Length: 127
Length: 132
Image (cartoon, rainbow over all chains, first blue to last red; front, side, top):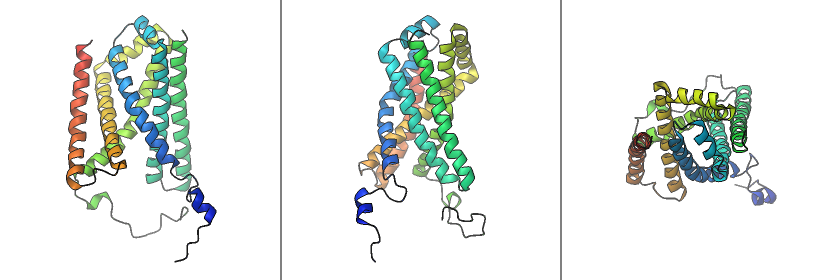
């Protein structure tokens, strides 16, 4: 069978969706980061449970804790945006509803990410 | 194809209903369900952080919510979903390296995922109660 793909298309290697392995790769990069970040998050929550407000604020104002918490939020939300996108693409086949769901996914993930990040920044800059 | 008429009476390829439930399949399904659960679970994280950023009263309110029996139950489920999804992810890394596709290996990893996630969740909660 004759290969109908153009030489340029082959070199670019992006396929019909035009983004090649980008989704897969970003999913894996955020997944690797999350192994470390979520481990940190779980132990942070365990160490902060039931602590008074003063202790909580002092912990969160530690620059390393602030940075790691921001990474937990941003990397975590990006990873979940990618994952939910796949779930929607797998199960929602009606074109209009699929578009709405894909958009809603981006809106929800972005809102959660920024709302949480602003909260962390507000606490770490002393509120 | 993207705009195909899905309401038309077409023959369907067999799906979940025709297969006997096996462990590797269950772990795959659980990986997706825990992922979706964690997605909505981030509302809890945002709620906690926003309350904390709003001042001492709101922070105490959030502590009260999470400290209640229903709050703890939800957080216990959240912990399990988090650990299970992480172990499932590690399994995917093994597959990404081109290993673990043999029947025994895949089954062993599936067992390790569920046993590991339940044990680690209980262990984390024991640690949580001990350091309190």
